[in-house]
Length: 242
Length: 226
Image (cartoon, rainbow over all chains, first blue to last red; front, side, top):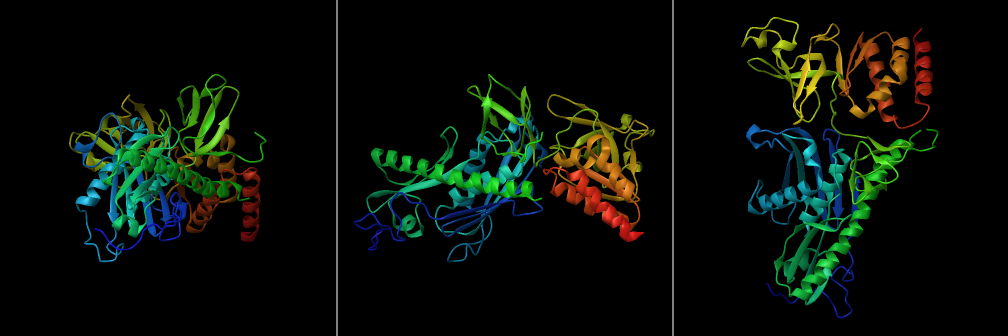
């Protein structure tokens, strides 16, 4: 997948004018849906993601229930119109994998022991995709879960880093993802810096990996502040309305 | 109590130290520090740090009177949705009727509403409810709405002040279940007015001086009618 375009120039400027450590612009809004227990709309660069949380409610089918804790069902889905060529709708291998890793990441932060035999459903709908949708989805899911009033030990947050044209950079954009050398999505619990999701696509040396990982964690903390502000904004205004 | 603003907390926020305060509802402890585990309003007293949730499911406790909707008739009882994280069981021995085995559908069916009381909660949070009390019954007619369970104390008011206020100015019958379900009966017009009032209370439940404002609103409306 070599191409002639220069992803990063000699000054460290990237295609969209960002520096190596800059993230794309992020906008988060909590509580956008009325029928869902909790919801969140997130824009991250060209990504647009809508997340709805339902539950805790009785897990169906009943054999999927866990008598000791709640199960977390995250469902990642890309809309047919989210990519340039129409994506064939419905679950595929990629979205099933992402659903699984996100479910497991969320299970780590939710206090599932409080709701035995219940299920918490997290529907992640990618409306517009531009690299890093799993990070965007997981970040939005964290806000939506808090908005649903679900007890958690932390609000999970995610950010990617990668390698383009020999440089390690944070938060890959579309061309950087397609023509770059490596992509490293990371999700953490920002209070403890515990890693709850870590995947890698491409090749990195150990030094590069460490550098990319640190960049991603740094990015996570930036995003985490935006998340917290989004939740507080939604409810502070409600309590001040006089 | 006379603080100007109520503080909103979000999960993972540090609230205090385990040495100076006890961790109350909605919190968790890690490495000697108390953290918020839920989105809610901070409620601190001398001994405890509690969080009153802003949203979320009903957390049942024994003796609560709730409004349930029957989900399913089983062989020897019913499964009832009471807005908790799992449905509650209403056993056939816990109803005021004599029910033969397999004849449960004659008495309560899918979609029926009941006013019930929480009978027991076991260690795995299995719920049982009962209809065996004078003031518990199957609900016929009226209007049912859902509000956030955390707003219920505000809708009832101190010693029922808010409820009696509504019933003083509007001709209606109201029952507020602890699980956030509210049953209202009366003529169409007054039901509409009650619903508006309740939604207003729910919206502004974290503000101060709400009872007085609601009274003013109801008074003005009542004058227009008479």
